[in-house]
Structures are given as C-alpha cells and as structure tokens.
Image 1 (tube, rainbow, N blue to C red):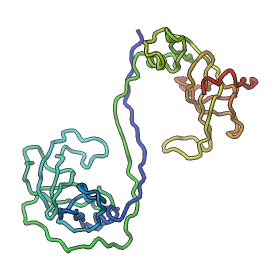
Image 2: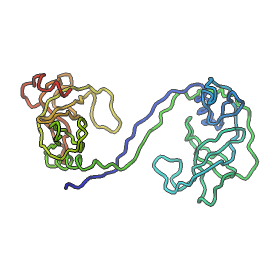
Image 3: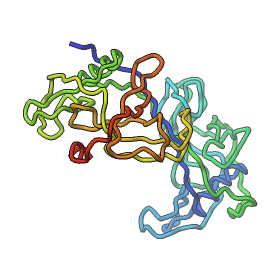
Length: 313
C-alpha cells in the first residue's frame, strides 16, 4: 500500500472591511490611546462596542469612554504562542472588564507564568509603540497595582478617523490527503496521472477521492489517464494573488484528461489568454523538479468536439 502523505499547510489571505461609525470611533480611539464603549438600550456599557443592541437589536451609537485599567474576569494559559498572536513568549488569554464597562474584552496578559494570573487580578493596557487604528494598538495587558485610571470623557469625535481595515486571516494546520490522493501525488512524481474507477457506475475520478461522490461506494481500482486533455470551461484571472509569481492576466481552466470522468483544475500557458477556448486540446508542462504539472499548453491538435466533453462541464 502506498504510504499516506502529510505536510504542513497554511491558508492565508487579507480580509478588507469598511467600518461604520461605532467601529471607526473605537479603532481610531485605540490609535489615540482612548478606549471607547457604547451604551446599550439597558444602560450597560459594552466594550468592545457593537453597532446593534444584543438584546433588542436596536441600532446604538452613544459612545462612552472607559478606563485603560480593569479586572480579569476569567483566563486561560497559552503555553505555546502561535504565529501572529500578541506575544511570542507564553502568556495568558484574559477577559478584562475595563473600569467603566459592563462587558469584557479579550486580549493577552503578559506575566511570567500561570501562577501570576488569577480571576479578579487588576491589569492595565500596555499600548503598542506604533499605532494605526487596530486592535493590535493594544500590545497586551500587564499587572496593575494602582488606582483605576481616570478618563477625559471623550465623545468619539476624532480628526482623520479610521474608515477601513485590512486584517490578515491565517490558518496553519497539518494536512493528510489520505490513501487515494497520496497515490495520485506519488504518481505525479513519475509523470503519470492516476485516478480511481467506481465499481458501480464505472466512472474514473481524477484526482481520486477514495470513494465515488455519486454512488457513495469505496474505490480502489487505479486507472492511468491523460496526459493530454480538453479544456471544458475556463476563466481569465485579472487580479494578482499575493506570493504568486504569475503575471496577470492568465487563464485557469477545468481540464478533462483523456480517460477521466471528472475535470481537474489547471493553469493554461503557451498561448495568449484571449485565445484559450472550450475544446482546446492541452498537455502538461512539468515543474523544473518534475513533481507536478506547472501548467498546461496547447498540443496543436484540432479542438475536441463539444459532444465529447459536454457531460464534464
């Protein structure tokens, strides 16, 4: 049996959002070392602020400044900080109810060990040296033995308010493709493309999934397909992706390899993007290390007739 593979995988993208007046005031306030909450319909001060009352769903916008000091309401120790977290050394995740607020804010508490944190502990904000209008303007919390800090009664009106943010989203995990796709990847290293045939409907699926998505039965019979195939559908990409060294525009297509009953994804090269078409016959161009197809290029054959791939659209 082919050894199942596993490897670390990172999914990362920037998330861009615009801000309404409440979130704009909150993040702009952090930039100016001011913490703002919002008063709910029942009179409670909510920090972080929300735009709609959590009980009545009414729109709210009565901003209230609260203190940068507060009390830990609950906590959990983080012994192994991950990429992008507030601190690189072990720290406590804490919910802090700031003085003047009725709800708690989640952030990091910088202490040497779990024996230095407890529910009811007094803490204060440690501001970041460089602030731009984001939750990261709070570098973390730190222990505080003094009196509650005062407030200036800020109204939430700022010069040059923050109106939008770009927040990176990232997920790190270990991925295992399983038996069927491990065999598929091993075959690619030999410049072969293999799928698996369903014992019931006899369709050949590439890449194989270990089970037929139509019949729901396990698959194990390997079938070599391709290497040539037919473009079934495609799109023209005009937005350059981060960390992808491909100039736009380029074409990404569904390609039905000869002998397969499911089209796979692949980039089309070796032809102007505006000449790619349905029915175009293509073949793989392998990466320099020969581990997988870098892209597909035209074979020079006549285009495939529509009837030969219409069921694979």
